[in-house]
Length: 99
Image 1 (tube, rainbow, N blue to C red):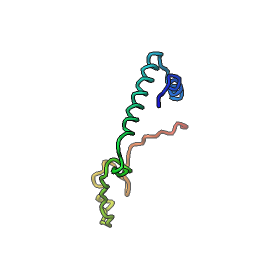
Image 2: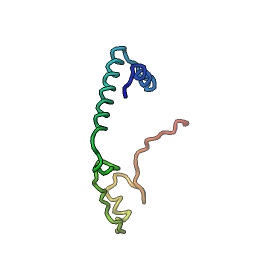
Image 3: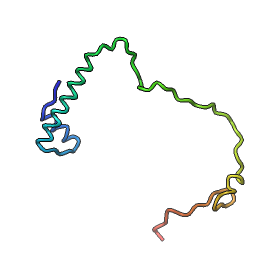
Image 4: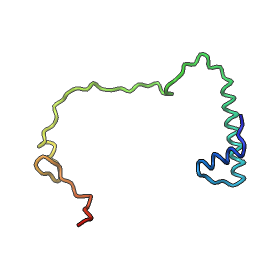
C-alpha cells in the first residue's frame, strides 16, 4: 500500500492545512515510509502473543468504601477567613451587568 501526492493533498484539505509543493512531496514520502514499516511489522509472527486491551496490565487499586465520621460544621469553618453560620463566604466573582 502506498499514498499518492493527490491523497496527501486530500488529507491536508480535510485537516484544513495548506502545504507547499515541497512539503507535499516530503509528506508523501514520509507517509509511504510509515506504511512500509507497518507492512514490515505485519510480517512478524504473533501466534503466541495474547491480545491486549491496554498496553499496561496494572490494575487500579481501590480502597473499600467505609463509612467514617465526618468533621462537624464548626470544625470545618473554624479556620475559614470568612464564614456565615453554616457556609464559607467567598468574594463575589460574577457581577450583575444589568444594574
